[in-house]
Length: 168
Image 1 (cartoon, helix red, strand yellow):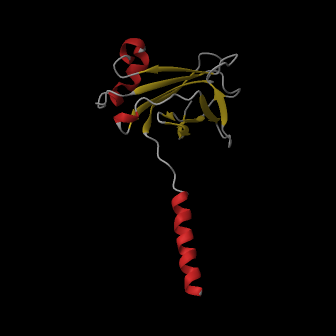
Image 2 (cartoon, helix red, strand yellow):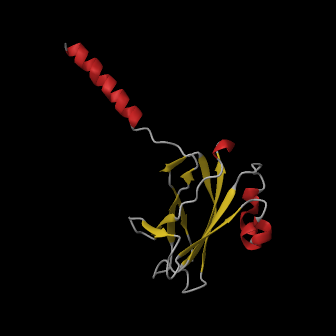
Image 3 (spheres, rainbow, N blue to C red):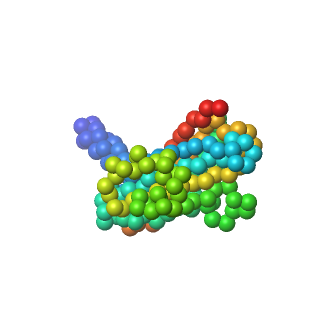
């Protein structure tokens, strides 16, 4: 009897561990650049670019999420911003691909060119986030959280966090 209970217990633990495995995204997200600019109130603006490529071509293109999370300096929590319908705007998203970025945004292309050159995949997106006036104090660190929706599963969105520390 005890042996039967222990076998069932081990089986239950194994099934429970299987149910807890984290799903993987069908897309790779890579931080290309994150810079701080001082175009409004001095060191409160951030520009970040993320490269999105598919693991498998059949899953391309993803559905863009209109939600991005940020954590500024030493904040423990993430504040989520809605990219659509903000007044005044705090984040803007522009989408490029490897074939159009040089023509449409030469300054960004100059910053990320070395990371784009080795990419041979035709399916790619460069997401350029412009954050404006997101902190009353100078930004020393920023953690940005973003994920795209899976093309064939609109319930599936796996977020990744990208962090950067800035020096004066």
